[in-house]
Image (tube, rainbow, N blue to C red; front, side):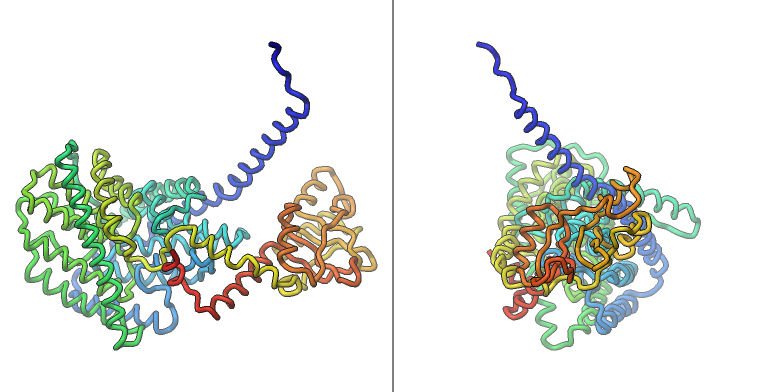
Amino acid sequence: MAEEKLKPTDFTQLRNQFKRQIRKFWKYSRKWFPFSILIGIVSGIIMAIFTSLVVNLQNWLTVIPIYIKYPLVGGITSLLIYVGFNEVKGAGISHVLSHKNTTTPMKTRTIFTKFFASMMTLGVSAPAGREGPAVTIGSTASAVIGDKFGMTQEDEMHAITIGAAACIAAVFRAPLGGTVFATEVPYKRDLDETVFLPALLASAISLLIYDFLLNLISSISFLSSTPVYLELGDIQFELSFSSSLHFLLLGIMAGFLGIMFSLLFKLFSEWVSRYLKAFLLPIVGMMMTAIVVFFVDSFYMPEGVVLEGTGFSSINHLIENFGGISIQVVLVLLLGKILVTSTCIGFGNSAGIMGPTLVTGAALGFLYSRMFNLDNTLAIAMIVVGMSTMHTATTKTPIASMILVLEMVGFPNLVIPIILSNTMAFIISMDFSLYRGQIESKEVLLRRKIQYTDLLQTLNVKDSMKTKFPTVKLDALLEESYSLLKLHKISAIIVLDDEKNLTGIISATDFQSGFAKGKMYIHESMTKNVITVNEDETLSTVFDKLTDYRIEYLPVVSKEDTFKVVGLITFRDIEDCYENALTELQSKRKATIEELENDV
């Protein structure tokens, strides 16, 4: 049987499909990879400066008693909140999630206010972590840079993921874990995988820059820029059926403990806020924290185990001295860490909760090992798995928790134990989380968008079009007119004749094509067949035209005279008008991030 030959039309279809694939890939790559490289560099620099300042502040302020420096920092945080800088409250991840999941812009000042407030909180060795400030600072910086790049609001929300990943990767030396955490944390049962590879690239670059700068800063004799990392050494562990049951039981215990932690973290501050003004919570919380930390660390804890600080040194001490620490001490460490994290971060002081959750998980693994009299190798494995499991139970990030801990401790043979424990902790702890602003999945956002799809039908072009816009004449020079694009931050210019009637439109692409062909005048390069809308048409109609013709802008003409241009409308104008109308509608309905959290 003779082979069937391909027809010319088949080759044309294949060629066109190949071209579409190339254009699609190039559009994605051109948009995200240069951006991720820039974000990686910026994040590495910011986190290196942040870490260096925190480490040196901790060294310089050791001479000041806890009962003085803790309330002092709490007072500074309260003052910042009092004057209106509410973005410094708490871990900051909840703040980022509320913006990301409601697509509202982030304020540029957050980079500086969160940097300062978190630097002070961590600089006095408060019982807190670094991931909250890293996510907030990285997300805000990325969103701001994305806005400067002219990104849409949807793209800016993805840019937030890239910035968060890059900064997390740097401070925890975990590029893969940082990336997965940034994509997993917005949702309780989903991932923001759209920009996973660009976020991973930004994370790797950020860590390289971070390490280089910290080593450079450490070379200065009077500065120390090396934070405490987890140091576990080389532990050989083999999984058996009996030990797997231990990990499952540990996950169940962590799930219930995670519920208790989440409830105390959220409800304690809410109860106290009934009797205090909101801006006073940070200083009151730091006073409580100072009392507990001072008395427990000074009069009960042995050397090497403390409630203050991120807790990594305490985890290292538990592993190194497993047989020499009493159960009572570790039980106080576990319960005390939960309490002081709730009074410090839960009351609005600026830092993260990853460090405390890892400490409580390590303490839980320690107590479990002693309770069942496990051998040293299995006990150390339980401590490491407990860290990941407790973080899962309190943040709803089971995959990121596993990868972060494995990258931080270098235990690849604990993958299966962590999966077993994390799964049980995730199931048992249900939807309880330390992070406000998490929603169930992307389906919640999709349902919310579908609910308001008819909103564009109620909005007219005249409600959102630009009435001030640059124009050029037919005989204007290309080279002179090109500067108008950058001057007005637009991608196309309307072309008018001497009677100010619409005759064409010239885009950035038309300019480049004209330059390449040696053209001199506007009329030689402009697009003559212009798609237009009138000012009384709905935004739904405009959106369809922009989408169908794959263009970014439309001249708006008068209904009476279709050659009379009265405005210009772009995708961004539609988005802004839509968001304003949606915000107004939601405010009437009191729709908030809490509504999204509870939407199932």
